[in-house]
Length: 443
Image (cartoon, helix red, strand yellow):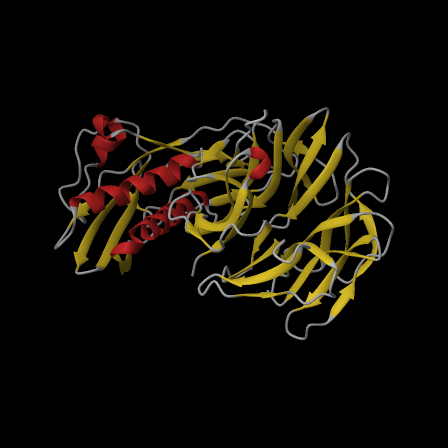
């Protein structure tokens, strides 16, 4: 039996209890008042996958490496180095010497095999609870092209993560962001898309016009973004597969920005400057019908739908300072939810529905933070010269954001942090990056 507590310390503890002799069973314990604790990483072993008929030893090793990097990167798992192994499997499906793995304190064991036939790859894996000597779930087999080997590695890591923690993974996902090059005061910006870990970067626009705030659709096939191509900020809808785009219809001269999709992908909420006011509007992409959701002299922007689509969180200075508010999806009187010191902005609702992430500026520092949807239990996860623009992983356990360093030559880059605030990591990209938007798990 393995009895581990993998604490993600947001508002919850992940207790992964691997007990059944036939199949591992995970238990999710939600402790709404928990705000701190100790993360004890679960030690796991992953011998290099076995190359089978036509298999490439290098590809098998690369797939094993990416799986391990995914798991290690969560802060919940700790890989046991190969130098500590007493034995390794003689082949995929061969009997496992569990005593050898218990001797080095491995609690989970991942084995696998890779076969190649032309440009087709087959990846098989098994996950074992070392202490019970039982396989956790059924073995999984994936098939794809040789170009998709990284994606298959992410899918295996997602399956391992899910079977141990009881929650969905987030590795087989992509992020759209603004790639930045050049000096600080004259940076070229273009839209780019990448795997969640910074690999496989592709560019969706050139740098002929400033682009800002890309936002994935719920299905990951489209991206909303703000472009200054016309000289005014206007919202475009871009098809990721074809890179074709169309402009969101608003009146000539109106300045539209900060868009987000609804959960069904058929509607867009955004900010529009009209008649000197900055208010939140809604557009039905099917009918083209527009509606105004707020109407005050205040600056109201950065709207984000709740997962059930019934509410919208946004930022407004209607109280005199920049704060967070929640209103119904069709408008109505909003309720203020932020009351701490400093200014709050760029709120985004967690896909789990339990938290709202935000940017906070206080005493000359910027922070990424989270709070309950009623504004309680505010917790700051980061602190730097400039952190901004949080976006949630598909499972609601990790946040990606942009960070700029101080100084005339300040650089921009993407970082991720889990909701404990204890696993801050740089996401490596070819150039600087800002305005990330984390898409759904790929289909």
